[in-house]
Each structure stands twice: as C-alpha cells, then as structure tokens.
Length: 449
Image 1 (cartoon, rainbow, N blue to C red):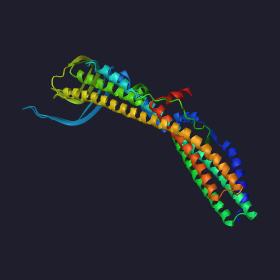
Image 2 (tube, rainbow, N blue to C red):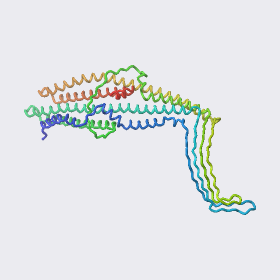
Image 3 (cartoon, rainbow, N blue to C red):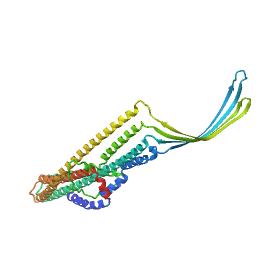
Image 4 (cartoon, one colour):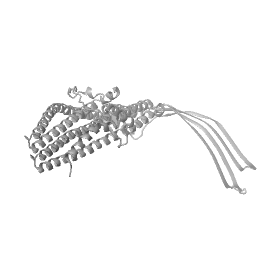
C-alpha cells in the first residue's frame, strides 16, 4: 500500500535538493542571452551577409566611374584545299593549305560623361547600402525582442512550477493530516483516498508544467542559435518598468524606427531613379583605345607566278572619341520618367501607411501596458489575500473546522491567483518590450549593457 508519510517526506527531500540541482546547470541572465543571440542567431547572421553584399556594391567602380581594360589573345589554325580559276588560264590548285594567325590586344573604354548618371548611380548604391544596414538593425531589434519574450517565458513557466510546488506542499500536508485523523478514528478511509487523488492530480499537473518549461527553454535555445538540449536556469526575474508614459501618436518617438528610416531611403532611391531617367536625354561622351598585335602565316600560297609562304604582321595603337545622343527610342525615356514619378508617389504612400501602422501598434502597446499595470497591482494584492486564506484553511482543516472540499477550494484559489499574477506580470513585460522595440530603444539598452 502507498505510504503517504513516506511520499510526503520524499517530496520535501526533493524540494530541498532542487536548489542544488539548479546550481549544477548553467546560469543564464537576460543580458547573457542577448549577447549569445547577437553572436549566433541565424537571422542576424544572414542579415549581416546581406549587409556585407550591399557594402561591397557601393563602390565607384560599380557606379561606372572607372574605365574598363580588357586583354584578349587568340591563336587560330586552319587547313584547306583551294582551287582558283582565272578565265583562260589553267586552274591553280593547292592541297593542304595551312594558315595560322596570332592576335593579342589590350582595349580600353572609358565613359567621360553620361549625363551625370554615374554620380546618381553612386548615390543610389550608397542609399542601398544604408538600407541594408537598416535591415540588419531591424533584424537585431526584433531578435532582441524575441529573445526577451522567450527568456521571460522561461521565467514565467518556472514561476508556475514554483506555484504548483506550493500547492503540492498543501496537498501533501492534507494527506498527512488526513492520515493522522484516520489513525485516531476521526476520519474515514474515503477521505484518505480523496486526498491522495488530489495529490496525484497536482503531481500530474506539475509534470505537464515541467514539459511547458522545457519547451520554453528549447524555444529560447533556438533563438540563441545553439543546441536545443542545452539546459540552463534563468536567473533574472520579471521586473516591469513602471516609468513608461504615453504622449499620443508622437512621430518623434518613431523617428528612430528602422522600418520608417528604410522607407525614407526608398523615397530617396526613387528620386535618384527619376534623375537617372531624365539624364538619359543627355549625350554620352566616351574615349576608347587599344594596342594590338596581329600575325598571320599562310603556307603555301600562289601570288602571280610566285609560289611560297605568305607572312604578315601588324602592331600598333588605335584610339578615338565616341559621342552619342539619343534622338528617338520609342518614347521609352518618357515612360521611364513617368514610372519613376509614380514610384516616388508610391514610396510616399508606403511611408505614410507604415507610419500609421506603427503609431497604431504603439498606441495598442501603451494601452495594453497601462491596463496590465493596473491589473498587476490588483493581482499582487489578491495573491496576498489568497495566501492568507490558504494558510488559514490549512490550519482550520488541521483542527477539523474545515472540510476537504473547502480546503481544496482555498488551495486552487491560491494557485489560480498565483498563476494569474505570473501571467499578468509577463504580459506587462511583453507590452513594455514591444513599446521599446517600436521606439528602437531595445538596441540602445543592449549596447549600454
């Protein structure tokens, strides 16, 4: 038969060992988690590679400032049979006519003026480089927010385990009290069985909660770009910043948001495209030059009455200027100019749309934050009442002044109040993190830490 006293003693022993088991695992703070994530998160690493490509593209050479120099060398061989017929003269036939030639050249092409398009192209490439950096910044900020949420989710699930352990301790006390009452003949066997069933139900709930904690740790490890089986203990608690104040949909709060900054650059890029399209109407002036070497050998060959080998060789410079002016190309330049203007207007609309979306998200986050602050104060006071009620209920049950059902109700009310406070505190922290993400202050805090 199941020994209730031994089970209660074993539970208390395990509770005493838990702190030592926790110390055997890695201690992980939020700052340390963010540091690991910034180094190993795959989204950040991918964004860094894209950012590097943008930096490599923003060069004068890619914009067309520098000349192109091309070296070329060929070596050709041929072997043919020829037959020449000149009116009344007899045909002249040559079999196995061999011909080989060697060519080598260095060619230069340099655009001196193209209507300013090369300058526009360079400015556009620099804007694209900054846009890529803002993508990386946005990825970093979103990742920090995700890591913070995932970290506090681990803390939340761990706190729920602590709350369950407190409830299990009450269940264990109830089992022990009921056993003692049965031993002295003031309680029925059914009360022991009912207490044991509730105790086992609490243990089952604890196992489910431990699974939820493990899954939360796996999610955090995934964001940190490391092995999902790495075990750790989240040492930070959920402390909500109570100093945040909402001042309406203030555009200045969102000025540092990378999404808006990127759209501002998109408008600049659209302006560069318009200027580049207009510059297509201007002439293009270029210079070209080459140095070449050519050698040809033909054997045998007939020239008049001479039969022998023909060898020719040529080398020297070639240079010149090229001026081109577009006269008519099917109105394509006008089409490109019109499309560029449309893109500018579209960029303005996208900026206004995203700004409106961010302002709405910020307003919702502040509303959620303010509401959770009020609930937090309420639930903290409510938990104190639930704790006192549970303590009184246990003592009254020990004295036989309270039924098992009433004790169980007080125990469940304490657990519900504790979990509700844990959830509210997490939701308040999540709202705080979202506000700081939208206003781009998360990255600043990470840099300070």
